[in-house]
Length: 581
Image (cartoon, rainbow, N blue to C red; front, side, top):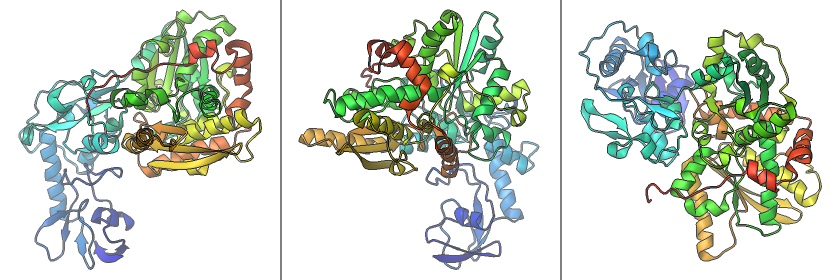
């Protein structure tokens, strides 16, 4: 521990704690633009300068550790003026189009400029004309608005290990771009959106598809249906002042009907169906030795993209089961349309997702059109939904609570925990245990696969057999798991795992690239807590117990892994190597 003084207030912190972190412990906020809690400090912006008594210079608080006896001044007229100058210099290289920016009213630079009362430009403007890049169809890159903080580069390279973004050129000409100055769609980008989630300005944001949704809703020839993902319900409230992690499921059902949707489904129902298929796959491979172990779950389209580009040798390990929202889309245009006598060609399925890469997933050719039509027509993020609610003038906080349309809406606790890292694995083991033993688990919670540790390893005893499990989130953590699998195969040793879950985004879908801005581990934890609370409060907590899932198989699909379910609910993968590593 070290002791120091900040603005005359004594503080004691662990050795190595930065001045920025120490100041927060005594309720002092030092402004920054480049620092994010997920990322290593880069000191790129220079806003966090502070004075150290007895030193004749300013230091950057985000990278300077508090030392024994250090006396720090964080705010005085000279420091404030220095920070104002830094902001003015940033503005001299930044376009003035806040009103039409994707981050208007939710921009860290905009907020700081307002806080410092900057009303006029003090330096000559130099904004290089650089075209926007919307080639992926999921996220939009506007290099003109980049402030060179480096957050997107750090998260893409260090946390995701994708290396799609880098800095090009030098000095005032520095700009963000894929290496080689190619289009984002030609880069290794897996469209996870973590760059947009960490960007402090409008340099990277999700492609806005809300206009498509409004047109579909207002078209009298269309029958518009919608589904909400598990992580959306515990994050959307942040845009409307609800406490972090508040579960707004039933208010969302009411809201979506008010927006004009004809039927409201829940992606959690699709998650329950996913578990029926995926747990059956696991039983086939683990018990009946039909297929390669370990089985790797595939609900995350960014992970699928990452695997096809960088790890195609793992394709045989992948579950062929589609992601839950694609399953709901296929069932809506077949099972639901048949039951309700609706022309599926007139049906528009909208998915509300915590994820930007779902925009990419719905366009994958082949199996994503299994219903005879595009199974999911439009995917929008939690952030886009928040904008739609505000456009519609709805008082979200005072809406009543309603139920979903039951055929594709009711879910178990297992379905909702898909939204947090480890949730897919936990839900699958609950049902796999039943399929193997024909007995109900005495305790359905698997605490060892929960939490924010990058790689979680554990084992579960099922009918006297050890099932070895791994859960990884954040794509950089995946390499550790895959390397262990490859090493065992190379040495012809027993597999280190039987079942593996991977999520591209840190924290899983609760930390998805399309969730409300400002994500931190504290926020991820609060959102996950809301999801686990929904599970704990559910009367049914295992997917195979869902009566509407049972009805679906009895009346329409037949059985898990059957001919019809395989056609509608499963997909295939192909090697698409982009770079050798």
